[in-house]
Image (cartoon, rainbow, N blue to C red; front, side, top):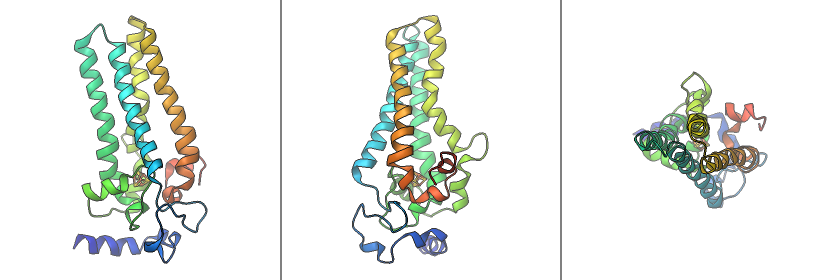
Length: 212
Ligand code: SF4
């Protein structure tokens, strides 16, 4: 019943013209006929994106453990709370609240650069409205805020620890996190992902980065 409702909703979406009429028979990784949009990103891209994300969150937790190593009663709860927050906002909240309204949820056999459309379909089988996807950037506690917070929180939270007890280990790990942010922006946002994402026409992040 739900899938009938989802598919009828999907058919009314303006984006479907991006998909070739014989889309269901299109080989994996093939390009849609509009621009360089990818209906299905390659597995290597998905693994790179998720590997980068998990490396970022784990290194971020490491930064906090190193920064407060002399205060383990603070270091462990802080690092664990950060790790849980980062993983949940990306692998639970995003698939539940943002992805259901994404065009990748409405195209059979598609795969976005993060592969989260597949996870989203499992966590919330009924598709959402495009507005849900666009609202990712609206409001103080919108998903974009949570996403950025998960990226930048470790170096910021480590500053007091560095002031109280400077260590090269903490500084180096914080540097790695900053490097991972730069890689995400330059490689994923500017080249590998956003310029080829079918959702970029509706995406406030793509508009902000001028990749539409
Ligand atoms: S492109 Fe973004 S919003 Fe769309 S399914 Fe993938 S992760 Fe979710």
